[in-house]
Amino acid sequence: MERSTGTVYLVGAGPGDPDLITVKGLELLRRAGVVVYDRLIPRELLLQCRRTAELIHVGKKPGRPSIAQEQINRMLIDRALQGKLVVRLKGGDPFVFGRGGEEQNACQKAGVHCVVVPGVSSALAAAASVGIPVTYRQKSRHFVVVTGHSNGEGDPLDYSALASIDTIVILMGRSNLAEFCESLMIAGKDPATPAACVEWATTQKQRLSTGSLQSIAALVERDKLEPPVVTIVGEVAALAATSDSFARECWQLADPAHRGDHPWLS
Ligand SMILES: C[S@@+](CC[C@H](N)C(=O)[O-])C[C@H]1O[C@@H](n2cnc3c(N)ncnc32)[C@H](O)[C@@H]1O
Image (tube, rainbow, N blue to C red; front, side, top):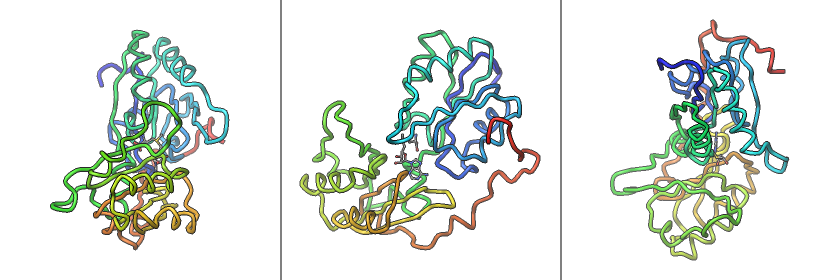
């Protein structure tokens, strides 16, 4: 951390509970001159920033026009070239479905020093927050994290390969859940395989639906779960705890010295 200016730090904010950012990430946030942040970043984290810090929201909201990735890259590079300590605060881990790799590439091409500070990905935290271990001796020897969002880009998913994995963790899969589960069953995954969906994992709004590969899409409709949702398919999903222990375990960056407001946040 000896270089504190002219650098872009790609920082993972964690899955939603503000206390799940890393110590390093939090320290950088408290020092940053500029913070460029996404839609799912908890407000409690932004309140950790210096009052003089420039806070820029670049969140992409489903169905709304979003800021182009090139514009975000430019923002990071320009401010770093001005000698500022720039934190690019991204949900979960910066390199799990967050276009963090592209931002790193853009910085490197522009000759800007870029450092990645990993975060706790929702891919793991959503399962953990409801008591689902993604690996478990004899039940789950491997797991895969996959996007459920098919936007027509790239090759279609190999569902046969996916079906052979013990535990499948699906991100961005809420709107296509029925089709995704159907494809897995056609590829040979047992329809009775346990499945769980976690909405707003690790936050006070966390909700859980449990069922089987065959039933989960209808149950999520019944329970009206909305994104952000993580789905876990595999024997381990049967271990999902139905009690909501998380709400009692939320400390919310308890240090009062760092609480307050910020002029950039209305
Ligand atoms: C663009 S991806 C970013 C993932 C992020 N980089 C990570 O490591 O968690 C956004 C997706 O992550 C999942 N997600 C993020 N935060 C979540 C949360 N608190 N609860 C449930 N799902 C979440 C949802 O599937 C959402 O559609």
